Image 1 (tube, helix red, strand yellow):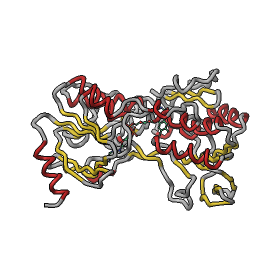
Image 2: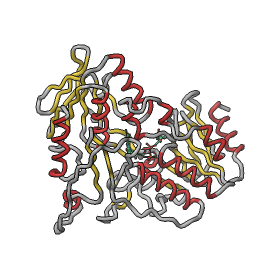
Image 3: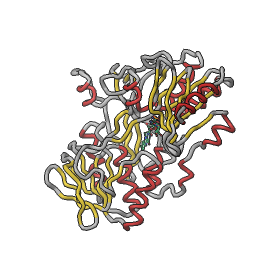
Image 4: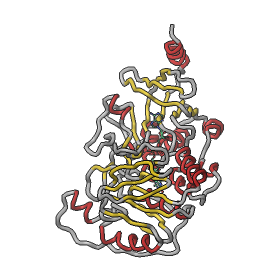
Length: 395
Ligand SMILES: Cc1cc2nc3c(=O)[nH]c(=O)nc-3n(C[C@H](O)[C@H](O)[C@H](O)COP(=O)(O)OP(=O)(O)OC[C@H]3O[C@@H](n4cnc5c(N)ncnc54)[C@H](O)[C@@H]3O)c2cc1C
């Protein structure tokens, strides 16, 4: 018998008769689901897998770790593997990727990243919370050293090393959404000179254009170079650093480049397993976060949810909904009829002393959703001093 077959059969033989809940992804949605489920049911076996080295870390703090506002990496860790084991009796496997789901056998295949060995684990209920991956456009130079996306603690560590090793002075942030702007703030905090390259003619794309104007003026007043309405064409090596070339032909030198042009739900596992995927590219779930398979739930950035204002399906990659959905899935698995009510996209972000907040639909969002007749009651208000990362919450 091969090593793989051996480990597969022993895993199946060892599986107990207790109800077994497996969770893929151990950060916002996955960890919330695991902790809530344990509070509801002491007898169920809960096992969480994450392909990364950590579970339950504060993704929201990553830009502030780059900016040295959070200087101790340990402060990003909300809960450890040991804490899950000792306090919640939840087994956590880090550096372990789930590579396949066999729905008819109700098993998953997992690969241990340290040994390379794969094994099969059976489930009674499976929860998918694999999140969303930063988009890397297929353009020349996006994989060059010095070009980063920010998703994990190791990503932030690499950016910090680049700044320190190169004594970096300049950065280009591609994308002027909330992660891009948080990176701008933190790179400025590290005393870099920063340029934003944004394809749309405004920063913070979810806002209506006129509401983004005070933010644009504020960024310019703080010395941020704004290249709006201009997309990324390519990145090349240049004099020991990098050169970002825009679609307009503008050339922006940089010691490092941050790609923050959005995220895409990580649906590969779900697609391979034949789960239903919706028109916005997320996994389709019902109000109890159950997928098209009655034994599989999905939560967080990977799912489509209902916008409570338009009634339409949307994807909303924010931590608040992910945490809530994780708890709703746990309640559903435990037999409670809790429902996720949908989202209204409430967000708050501090940018260099200015606080930008929004909730509900923008005018352009409503038009995109097909609404043509409505009354505008939107307003802008500048609140100072800026909220600190500790106060910042996306709901
Ligand atoms: C830099 C940054 C800043 C942010 N700031 C904010 C903020 O201020 N406020 C806010 O509300 N939201 C913020 N967000 C978004 C928020 O972090 C996400 O919405 C939330 O973490 C989504 O939770 P999730 O469980 O769906 O996915 P994640 O938290 O991304 O967790 C998914 C985990 O699954 C693992 N995984 C994926 N596939 C597999 C597999 N096949 N096998 C095993 N493991 C797998 C991944 O490694 C990852 O650790 C930020 C995100 C980033 C990247």
